[in-house]
Amino acid sequence: MIYHKINKLTALVLLLAVFTFAFSGENFKVEDFTLPDYTGKSHSLSDYKDSQAIVLMFIATQCPVSNAYNTRMVEIYKDYQGKGVAFLAVNSNKQESIEEIAKHSRENEFKFPVLKDDKNVIADKFEAQVTPEIFVLNSDFQLLYHGRIDDSQREDNVKSQDLRKALDEILDSKKVSNSETKAFGCTIKRVK
Image 1 (cartoon, one colour):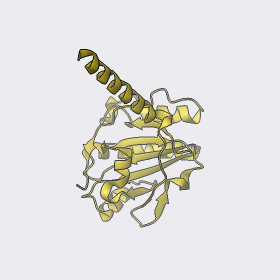
Image 2 (cartoon, rainbow, N blue to C red):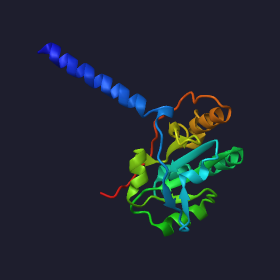
Image 3 (cartoon, rainbow, N blue to C red):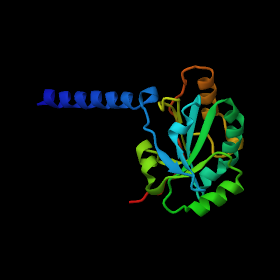
Image 4 (cartoon, one colour):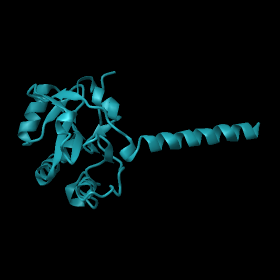
């Protein structure tokens, strides 16, 4: 009986290890998707396939953590968009309207597209949980980095520039040394 339980436990651990390996790092490939931005223009992931990296940022208008990163997101966009990195923000919160997203984007001078993920379909596919949460893909839509922008909501306390480091490594044709960090912020408010 004990032998039987150990075998079940061993099988479960091995299954979890295989599942984790299959859906981590470059082995996780994302399917193309299309979402409208706040002007109604459609954007497909495949529109950006010629980029060296595609940064998907799940953001919010009402989350204080996400809003603490607005200036940093703009700065990162300015620093990397001319280097072949595409940026797409995705708003999946059910209570945040297109009008609110448009106003928020203009007020924060977002030059990157901000897409509305109605009914959180894309957030569910990515298993995005919080805002801000980052997913960096290569041109084949393989996941290269997932997690936070940096390690502190308070900009003056930042010690680790995780997203910048990942982008620098990608642009230098290196493997991302820390491909998974813990994203933190407000939970995405999903449609039930």
